[in-house]
Length: 44
Image (cartoon, rainbow, N blue to C red):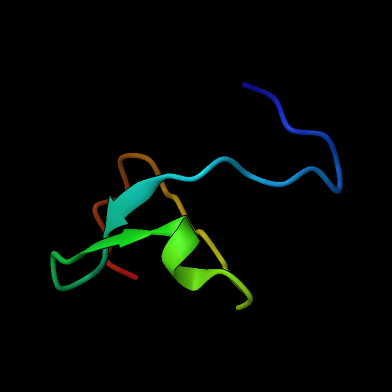
């Protein structure tokens, strides 16, 4: 799936650094930064 600039991201869930599931919709109205480093094995 490709997003265009200004297009809303679809809702998704990922574990945080403590293992809790966080959904994008839980953060609505807040700034969100998603950092993904494949195969880096470094926690952020």
